[in-house]
Length: 149
Image 1 (cartoon, rainbow, N blue to C red):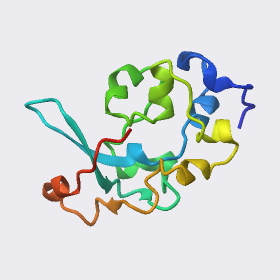
Image 2: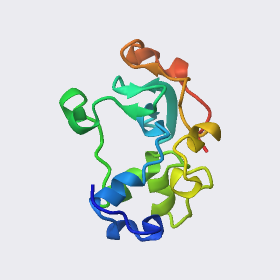
Image 3: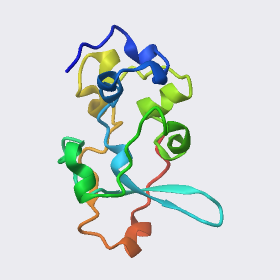
Image 4: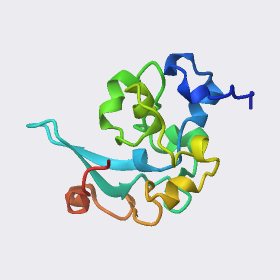
């Protein structure tokens, strides 16, 4: 892995190296939650039904590098497409925050120095998701959660 520049997270997203881009992820796992978008209103609802590849305790993808082989529709977030995707990301997401010109929260590991701080702050999905492999898609509405802020 290439060296990360000091306070790289304060730079515009378009200036980040690939390694810095990946390092911006806070490890919350919220982006791996299945969402429902209502066609008539455009409203987006998060569920606690997670991608089948999410490790619900570690809040990490079990097959990140090869995830598209198993989940072809998994989104590859990048500086090129964040403008189109940011709206469905949780408000606490580091990518969305930086896209919106906001600072990272104190619990983000780049600020706190600990990868556990996202979990300690209650900002991750650790321990409360169910796998989409266990829940039929027609039942996802039963698993809608309050907005993620």
